[in-house]
Amino acid sequence: MENFSDLANDFLQSFSCIQGYAGKFSPGISRLDVENFLGLSEDLLPEDFFLLYEWRNGYIDFRGDSNFNLESFAPFHFNTIEVVSMEKGWDWCKDNPPTYDGSEILPFVSGDSLFWGIIIGSDYGSDPHIVYVDETGEAILRYDSITTMLKTIVQCFQLGALYFDDGFIEKNNKLFAEILTKNNPKTLLKAVSKFEDNIDFYGSNLDNETYKNNISNLWNSLNILEYMRPPEIIERCKSRLIELQALSSQRAINACESLKEWIDKND
Image (cartoon, rainbow, N blue to C red; front, side, top):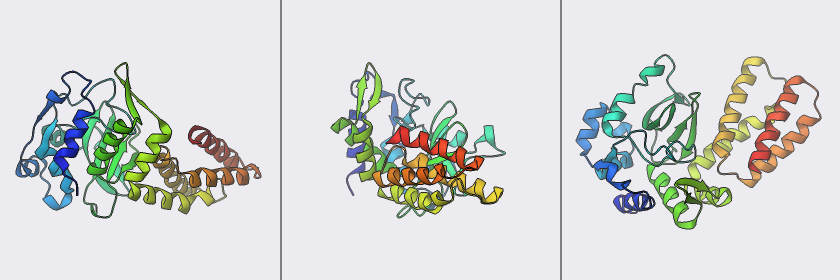
């Protein structure tokens, strides 16, 4: 595995045009400090989470830079372990904290009502586990790991998929999709599998409870895939759209409108 500190330093270098940015990251802390602050055993978190905090203990201003820290395709700072510890209980939504497929999430990036987190207790060797949590509380899988996330961001800046324009981060959608997909094959596989399990039932006459679950799973997969834009998924959506256009139920009509909107946005 490539040297994590070198990768993390390359991440900081990507923001060298932002005066004082690197200096706002606190010095790293020990693995024991991480465990003590969070009250979580080592096996419940991925190895590169500890490597991240041994490298730096997060960004001093936990809201990051207001120009670019709340993007849904990548985070550009991470919280100090003190803030992570404070937010890990999701106190402001304790009755219904975000989960992913039933697993708890540890938020390590935050700004307003948006978060990035780690799926706690995953099989970190085989399962993708970095999620974006939107303002509705939906957790959307984005990256295989912290390492692949940093690698994706670094390569995107190096190759021009991400770039600064008047202090704001801009994105070349096609190039970003290629780099994101290449570096995060487990996330792609998970999303495609969920998509294929549900697309044929979209707009069908399933009973209400089953259909509600179908919609939730299908759109979660499409939300994951929106930045990857795999051509085969877009073509399958187009095929389903044609099938839906031949149906006259209100459910099919609604599904048709939503699917067409996703295709128009991502094709």
